[in-house]
Length: 171
Image (cartoon, rainbow, N blue to C red; front, top):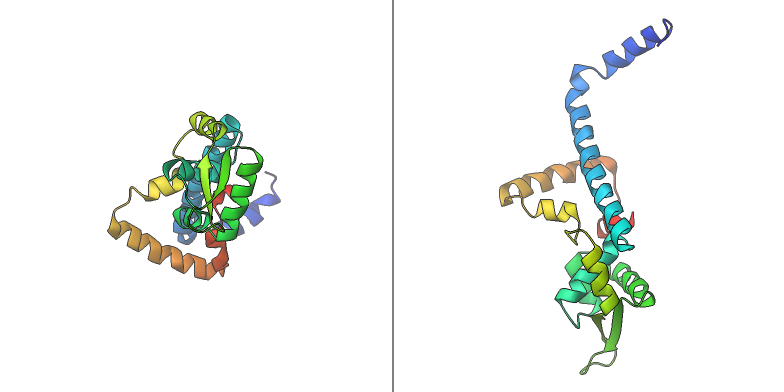
């Protein structure tokens, strides 16, 4: 730092000083969360060779044989078109098989193939990701408060509601 930087740094400290400390702390907390999520998805991709959303989808298909795309989208809390795109990628890699329903020939049924089971074995858990797993450990009171507080932040960001249906692993 040079002597001519000192006045500018002093002004920055005044604008972003003690009053900004809680905001800076919250920002650091979000960074910790995002970095934990990012690190997990990087480990998944490195070990399994697939993205986090693909691994999650494989685990849902494994746990619910003959699941349809609509039910898969509900299980993952994602848009149906996102689930359909995930399935197309998994089918192309021969990790999942698509069959037709016995009652409704238009309905598809998904089954895990041996290569998909191997990918799951290589992948570190939790399959749904570390953030959903961590959120799942919170009590109802904390979840309700967090939901209300995050709603305020989402409003301040003017964030797109549709973005809530995109898995973090896809971002």
